Image 1 (spheres, rainbow, N blue to C red):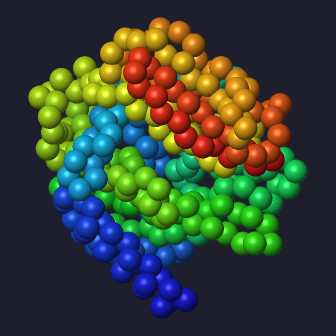
Image 2 (tube, rainbow, N blue to C red; image 1 turned 180 degrees about the vertical axis):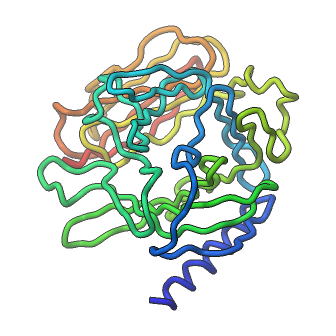
Length: 308
């Protein structure tokens, strides 16, 4: 068991050094009997005005700004990222991705901010077999220095649990108290890793903000992009995100594997910005589908997998 933990630490440090401009200096690891005196909400600081700049190989790949919040039923709070409803956080320190229904039962459980070392939870389950789905687990908790501050970190791994076939590693996330998501890695390298290059948290600037000259609240995408839906595989709903750099007529359509159109998700003029659309496939059969965006001369498509 000790050898396994040691190997995991070495691999994690190697990736951190490779992808991060400011090295993560680990001070000490915590075990399951250690008490950690930190506000769980600080692992996901969602105050309006907080801003994160993420990079890969020192190139900016994503910027996120908390542009608003609103109170939902049962004291749940909805947070808007780049002017779009994105996260819901409840009074039990649980982070969900927002669903248009507003019902928690339809939202994916992204993070449990008060989770202990070794604790795991389902992000979502299949309806037919509730032992299958996507799970996340707290792999390690440690104290480290990053972007000039010393704080507590939680490394969270994501697996696809496929019954008797076991668990398959999908993603790794690193959450820092007072920082938020510091790193996201995709084990299959379908998408590049992202690490936190700089941030503005509660008015304090951490690191060096690149290329926005303090006008970070005026951030707009520079090109039209279609992102991979998340989660994928999914059941019954998934989120499709895309960016529009200037006002244009947008169509977002879903096709089956034979090329037959089965749904028009978006069809109309949209202003510049980042859009996140919930696609519900409750009435579709399991299988592979194609979603395609058309914006002026720009056309792109990706695959989504419905697993019931």
